[in-house]
Length: 521
Image (cartoon, rainbow, N blue to C red; front, top):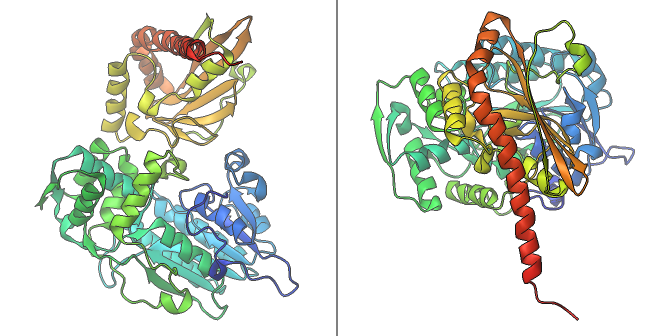
């Protein structure tokens, strides 16, 4: 937590105000494993708060650097029993959950969760909710409309509530930044919907965190919604070309076309960027209206940072710096993808009586277990999948075409993985450093799929075990497995040979480097 960028939480204006008895206040964070929640929690700890989080899976919380410093209540925001336990003795509750990437029924789910929390939070000192910046008196997109409704439910709870209404958030790993980044880098000329001419007011993620931290100190007699935004009001096309300048690219030509509906535009974004369609859709829909700060009432409640709010191009520069240093704190990928199994791979004895298909391969290698594990942990992203890249690319594009996450989602860090991390169209379900990496499929398939890789010492070398597991769903699942079966010989056998070969090459390179070093007396 010592390497956090500003705000760190240690700023005097953001420090926790002790309770009347002198003890540290307790903050409850809903959505702690998401993009903003994962950044807010360590800063709350730095600021002197005790922190409790409500999460579906305690293992995901434990994977964060700050995981051991918080209290965990397992459960869902829509579960009255779990929420009832989580809100006990809480001074400030941060509500950072929403269903941006959800499918049908997301408005009902958002409403149910907000109502559950509002009903349970009667004794909470304050609620802080991050909503969406929006114009008044116009028809809003379903997702913006839902976020406005959630804010209203929390405000009507009777608990002092501060709704921070933010626009496009710019920071390393944010979905909005990644959309701007990939659209600009991939397309020298972009046919775009007419909303590229709308004015919007982006805000740097560091400034969002400043306001979230400051909201906990707002007087108890304040209960209202306020707008927050950065210092620049831009058109979306200007945002793309502002990114181009900071990234050292040529200015992009942009043509506004009235025929590109939000649905068509979200398909376009899905194909050109790593953002899946179900996440692209609410982002695109939120850009249909001009979203700029209507007033600066927030300044009287939470003074802006001492150095001032972050200009857009400075926010882009900071985000690019984090990407280059492989130092992205959290990513939009951290959120679970709705409709994807969250249950772990069952133990082998549990397969009895079920249809299951497997592909199991083992190889012995002269490579050390350390080198072999290093290759396994670095799989995916820029390094690829150590087998026929064309077949993997085809599978990724096929997933994109049906609205899946595709293969270009990449990974947050080049060399490190923790439970819950996304790796292209997989997610880390389990990791035992040096021994086991299990990935759960998040591509669209008619069933449930996992890929498991194990490393074990074997004499002077090591053994590599690889297992693909597929639980088919109905006839479609069985036909799918039969259709891809011919390619497994190329893909999975190629993976085994290339992974062990890469580990052996790494050992040989290290040995050559050691031999080339001058002897010391």
